Length: 621
Image (tube, rainbow, N blue to C red; front, side, top):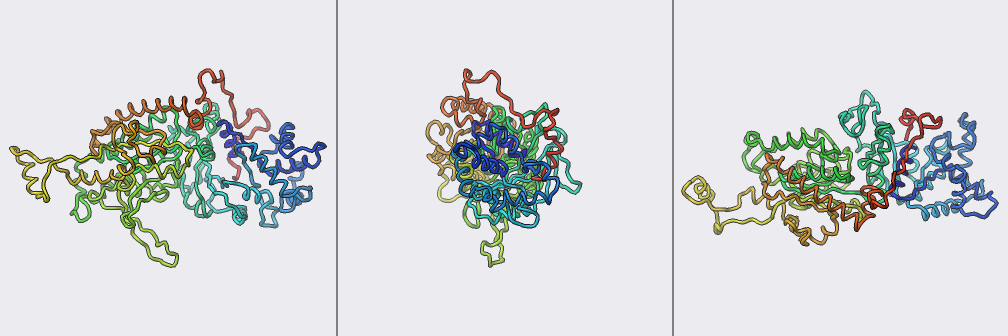
């Protein structure tokens, strides 16, 4: 009940007309349509019920709201016949209502509203049968998207109702919604962690961290997308957080339903990637939400941190520690090895990454996330959307010759074969340094993409050393104080350059000022809504010791560009701005109301009909 009504309120706050329908409402509408003295349509009948206040009374879920009299639900046996007569496969026939009539009503509601939420019955026909109710089957058949809503603290096993509805023929996209309650008590055997008490997710211990999402998805077959939704308390200090706050997970889900999600794409660039943190900080300062995160190389690292922590304040300490370890010369010396595959073993780098991400899984991050790596085995780019986070971030940051590729053992695609293939994964920059195309396919053409590119100019300049090069000759020139050292590209320069060739092929990514001058390729130019290129070209790929300078320059640049972008949206794209910052942000100063109306999910505590928080926690979704 809380999920349905909160989602409806969020959609309405985005100027979207929403209608909630469940079996009880439909039952009453059908009766009114057949007995009303006027020849009214189904929509008129529904409006008639709305005027009588029946919608408010019957739109709640729960057994006590589904019967015409409360006494029928005091005895389970006496209400079994009512279930069967009203909600089972042929129940509506006894009311003189056919299936076609109900479908016609649903089509009318869909035509007159932007979004129609069909709430299936949370029970079967009766305790003696394993068949879903007539209404539940119709919901699955008519829906474009089916949400499997569950309390994340429950077991991931499928319910009997889910098993029954799985046999219903439907072309709907199925998605999983896991709810997390603020201050929820965890079982003693749970391995869930809790966020720090300083987290903006709230007091009373915060929220349990997502864990075991993979099992939830596998148990339910083809799940196209999963969502981790935090449900905040409606306290005095956080009234309407889930409805109004730009970091609300309900608002993120609502934008996804409307096809208006905001995706953040972070490109590779080594130490210059510290400017990604500055870009995220500038976006948060302007109240711009981030719904999806993607990255390559250092962008995969920064994006993974934000998808987990969802706040730039928690990232500063981790980035500073990571930069310090990357600047340590002693650790690099200890990690040297005989260069058969690479100069370094990769063990020191692995330890640093593991410290940052621990054993986190990609599917257990708060925000949907993916990173790009290059599969050397199959010669293709790979977008990693599940699995161990640190391993695929490490794969996306692996420059060939510096560190060995990550070995990813995957079973053969042939069902009859039991063989497993080893896929060698290297830096994603070799294929796609700025994966905007993947993000566009994920969030749709109406979504908003913010891309941050931190790579430097792609040209290599040097002296002509002929058709061959003697390394000893070059070394003697370097140590001779009286000789001029020739300027030639080193192995590191070449490896770094190879990682950005794909970006040049995308249409000139990496050239300063290219966005305004038209250097951005047509594909990227059409896909990117806000393009940020912090002026950090002078810093080298491995200059992590200067991360504070890079962050300062990046923040000053990003803050200015984001403000300009919002001003342009207010002038030319107010509809897009409405979904990003809310309807009131798209209004001019003259159009804004003197006081915005407040919508609260729960009524006054003194109201006898108000639902208590303890009861909400006990609801089995």
